[in-house]
Image 1 (cartoon, rainbow, N blue to C red):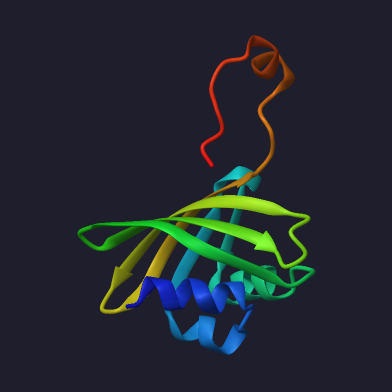
Image 2: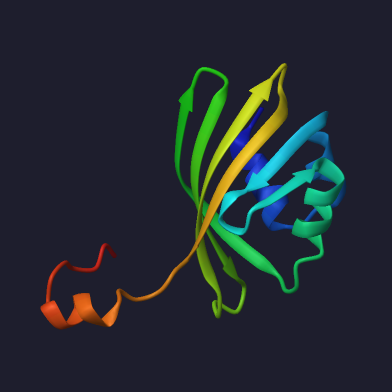
Length: 122
């Protein structure tokens, strides 16, 4: 399975292509919002999410049958920006499980800024 192509289709909200990556019994968990989806529910949640999206896969690691990805996801107008860490389990070239952790991008909290500690990554 090509994890980069998977993310390309997810970001394009291409429901038909997304379905092809999954085993029929796969599940997806969005831990930050305490949601558990089957494939059909995941496609609805992803493809009916408002707006148009873009992004880039920033890192991929593979551990046996699990891809770990870090992906920067942002609205095309750049008003919204997230980083998502995904653990994608693949068996026989099909996704059987995804565990994802989504984080809003933003500035450091005021208390840390006031201490003048740390510096921007980019």
